[in-house]
Length: 380
Image 1 (cartoon, helix red, strand yellow):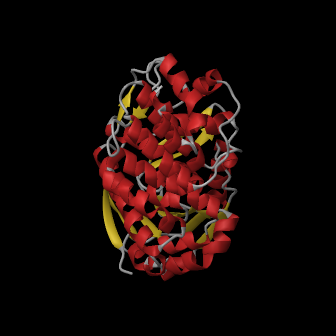
Image 2: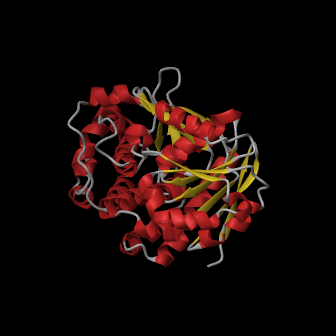
Image 3: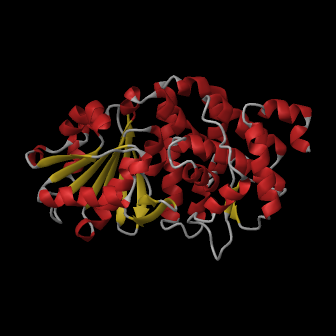
C-alpha cells in the first residue's frame, strides 16, 4: 500500500507523518532523507521489541545500522517518570550518543512521551523519529510534539514541546496489539469525531464492529483522518495556547482518574472514556450539550467494550486531582465541552455544583445511555 503523507507544521519546521499498512518495511529511504547520523538509538520496551524489532531493524538505513543501539525500558504508566528518563539518558551516554545521533521511539504512548522527552533533553536536543505501535499513539500521542513524564502529584507535569523529524504509522503493527489495548485506543478515535468531525462519528456508529475486528478498510480510513485532524489543530496551535485544548476533551477527568488510582486501574483510553462521558454530562449541566449528543457519545463508547468501573472515591478527591491538571489557570479548572457532535471549546465557567452533579451521574450512564435517554432520566 502506498503511504499517505500528512504534513505537520512546527516551530522547528515541517515534518511528515506517513500512514499505511506495511509501510515500515519501506521507511529506510524516508529516514535516510533526514540526513546522516553518527548512531541510531532505538528506545522501546521489551514486549514491543519482541513483536516489532525485526521489522524496525530493517527500516533503519544500512549506513547507520552498524551503529544501532537498542535501549529497553518498562513502558508501564507507573514507570513514566523522571527516574526512567534519567536512566535512559545515562544509557545514551554510555553508548556514546552525541548531537548527531538519532533516537527512534518504538512503542505506545508511554514510550513516545518518555523517548520524546529524552530526545528533547539529552544534549539539549537530538533528532527524533516516532514509530507508534498502538492505536492511541498512532492517532494521537505521536503527533504534535508533546513529550513528558508524570509526577506523583499528577500526569505529564514535566515535559517539553519537541517536534519529531518523522512519524511512521504502520497499521500492520496493530495486528499483534492486545485487544484491551486496541479497544482503549478506539476511545481516542471517538474523541476526534466528537470534537471535530460529525462524519467520522457517524462512520463509527455504522462501522464499530468492523473497527473492533481491525478491518483494514476501517483502519485505512480512520487513522489517517484522525491524523489529519490533529495535524491541522497542532499546526495552528503547537503550544496549546488556545485551539489545541480541544484535543483534551475528557482528559481533565481522565487524568484525575488515572492519578487517584495510581495509574494501575485504567489504560489511558479507558480513563478518557469515562472522562468523555463526564465531560458530555458536564456540558449538559451547563446547558451547552444536548441530551441526544450525550446519549450518542455514551452509546458509542459503550460499544467499545467493558472497562474498569468508576472508582469508589469521593467527588472532592477527584476534584482535588483535577487542580493539578495543566489546563488549570489562576486556580480555575478548565474543561473542554462539546455543544454538538463535531464541535468543542474550552470553558472555565464551571460551578462546583455542576461538576459534582456530572460526576455523580457519570457512573450511572455508561451502559444505560440509550435507556436513560428514552425514559427521560437524562432530562431530570
